[in-house]
Length: 429
Image (cartoon, rainbow, N blue to C red; front, side, top):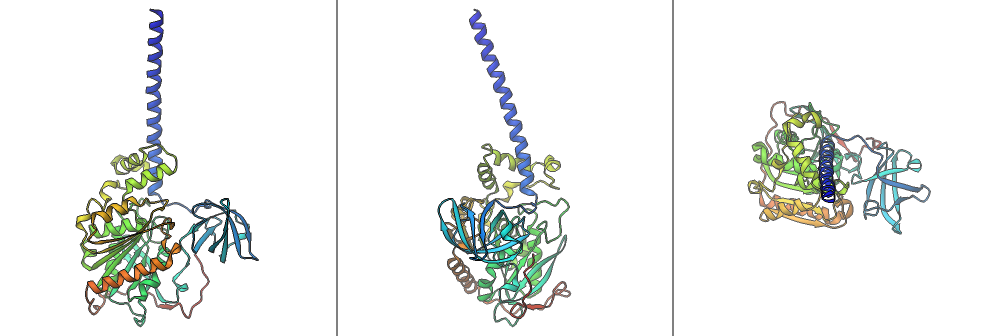
């Protein structure tokens, strides 16, 4: 009887301990979900970068970096260092023994690379449109929150005027409109005008009240404003091009705005954020966080009570941002490009969207290109896809027609044309 009572007490203690442990784990998971949710929607300040610099030989124009998936990528890249106070451009991999990667230094644009200890690889190679040998304009897009700066690059052979065909580029989370400079030459070479926009809370456009990302659920309104800007200047056919979260923003603009759909003839997506719940799960696993945290984060973001914890002025219903669930509403062709080893936004969402609308979507998988670095990894293939697809859209959607006269006041915010072939400004951030 004594032994039985003792065993009962032990079992009871274990059950109590398990209950306490479960409660502690649940509390920790809830706390992590709030922290992670706040991080997802909060624009981040510049970071020192995760890539370790092991040596710099300016005389031989080489840099040695700790070998990682990012530093061993083939191609040409920007390299930010000293917490984004310095910038260089890196070329081909010269050697890689599995521990150290040695790359060519193409240029050091500003900063002391020889004194830096860490940096980050970037898809940005160009620091501004002045490097592209194209005339361009600094313009301002009027949005509901105020004027948002943009770059306008007319089509080649358009006599420095905008054509009736426009590609509006929407950059990703934590980046700026510079991200889209890689696409300017392919776009303008085939007769389309490029407009590279900024949007709320990206560090250039006006801030919203809460200064938080809406994961596409709020930023789409700034794309709508850009479409209005283009239409006022004679655009008759418009393609939206979105990078990473910019892809989510572009797709929300298509789904939510009749004004956008009125001129839309196509969408280009590079490494797009399609399924936010899947992305949150993927990134949680990458950080070694508990299983199911991604779903908990999505729940927190969508709850009305969570605003005081995340800083959001209004909840973000992540499940309502799923374009796969609304794939039947899309009516224009899409070019969708994604790398199987993205490392930040899993390719699964892109595969599901492509499978949902094979009649509209041309899906191109890359390997070894990581996140939004498809052009850097394989510029020939990427450029051919852009130019070929735009040519197909031009042919299939018919003549654009003569541009209409700009609406009254339509040129407000526009600046004189800068001819990059004559100017040679210093590359500044």
